[in-house]
Structures are given as structure tokens and as C-alpha cells.
Image (cartoon, rainbow, N blue to C red; front, side, top):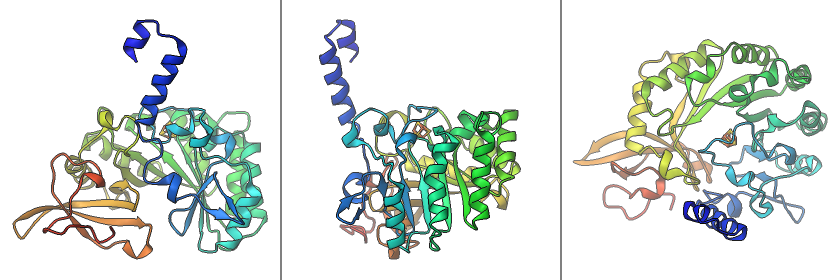
Length: 349
Ligand code: SF4
């Protein structure tokens, strides 16, 4: 790309190279396009993912942009204008009809992009019909967002902040749990007065804020940062939820932290926080077969191994079943691992 730009290459050539680079970066990892998209009444629901029984992901069309555009974004394919790569839907009626037929779904997670880039009016158009449809099996409405870190004014002084907070209250008044899945990467993001005010405002609606972040080289690959972040989150009334491994998409090579180091960072931070912050799980890999937690490194029968478990699995009976992989100093994803003890496959293969 640099050479093309230096040589003033024609636009089509630059576009072509952009395309090649994008396609080499695994736009939809973990089988999302092929395996997670549900079907309903003969239609493929391209704006939803249903991987684990109890949770459905919905990608509202107007929320498929973001405040932040993180260089390590794992949803970058949502933003590049290629419709065949994008998850997106405006059809809340279809979502409702799907939920009515799938009582195993307990949580609807609005995600993106960042649904909090939408106005209160638009958000209402997606959330209120679910409340009005009175689907008993739905217990939790979740929104995944970076807004608390990147634009906390969303909940404090935007022209529709009050409407957003009223919508959250409305969810709790309908006896559903409203959960904001907040993306914070660094304790610095919790330092401003406005983020503290935003957290207070959100909590006053009965909404719980659960926090999550990938563990990213050059940004937060130090235990002390995670310790500070989790302590401050608890002090502000948030619930630490996940430390993720960098997903196998985008510029993973640059942001990668090996599993062995990730586990050390997690353990060192976790050992120093109070029980209230030990709600956090990780380091966790969101892989094709499921969410895999790295429990630790052990030596068993003279073999050094990673001890792992599923926190979520494509098959629910895989969950919480410990399994073992050969230790590796450099492995950073499930696909880098080999089964331990001379086995030729993992139990879920
Ligand atoms: S906040 Fe999330 S969706 Fe937005 S750019 Fe960052 S990683 Fe991507």
C-alpha cells in the first residue's frame, strides 16, 4: 500500500489493494457468517446471530457504525461498506416472531458497531416493541457499547440523554433486566468526571453496567492496569465481566498477547482485587466452538499443559468441562493448540 501511494497509483489499484488486505484479515472469524445466522419462516436472518441457546445478537441497521473505530476492532467488517459482509437488520417484527418461537432465548443483545450511536427515538423503535410483545421468556435486554468511555455525554448532556435514561427505566419497569455491556480498555477511560456522572445516571435507572475488554499489546498488557481498572469499576458500581483474548481477525499480529502471558496478567491482577471484582472471567477466547476460558498452566504427568474450559459452547453440555492442551509459549488462539497427553483431537472436535 505504501508503495502504491508513493507512486501515485491509480485509484482502482489502491482500492484493489485495500480489498486484498481486508480479505486477508479474516473479516468474520469463528464461523459467524456460516454457522451463527438463524433461519426463520424460510428466511435467512442476516441481521442476527444465534450461537448459544440463551442469547440472540441483533444488529440494528442504524447502529452499525461506532463512536470509536478502534484500530483493534473485531467488528471492522461492519464498517467498510460491503453489504455482503455486514450483519444488519431493521426488522424488529421478525425478531419478535423469532423470539416467540424460541423460548430458549432469554437475552437479546443489541450490538454493532455501537447501538448507542443511535438516537433515543431509534433505540425505542427496537426495544419498546419487544417490551410490548410481552414475551415471557425474555429476561434480559443488553446493549454492547463503547459510549461510556468514548462519549459519556450520551447519558449526561446530549439532547436526548433523558430519553435514553427513560427508555432504560422503562425496561426495568417491564420486569426485564437492562444491562449495558461497556467496553473499557484502560483505567484512564474511567478518570473523567463525566464518565462517573454517566455511570451514576445509568445506574439510577436500575440498569447494571458490566465491563469488558480485550487484552491488547501496546495498550493494556500489564497486570497493574487491569487491577486498577477492575477496582475502579467496582468502586463506581460496575461489574467486571470479561477479559478477552484478541480475536483472530484484523491486525491480530500487532495486538496479540500469547495465552501464557495473558494468563499471567489475568492471575496477577485477579489476585490483588477484592472478591467483588472477581466476577470477571478470562482470559477468554471467542472461538468457533465456543467461549474458551484459560484456567491456567499446570504440569500433569511431567507434561506442561494449558487447562481450559468452555464458558459457552455450541453444544451446551461442553460448558465447564475442563480439557487440556499442550503448553506453548507462543500460542495465542485455539487453532494454535494441540491436544495434550498424546491425544489426536479435543473432545469437541
Ligand atoms: S468500540 Fe467495539 S465496535 Fe466500536 S470500533 Fe471499537 S471494537 Fe469496534
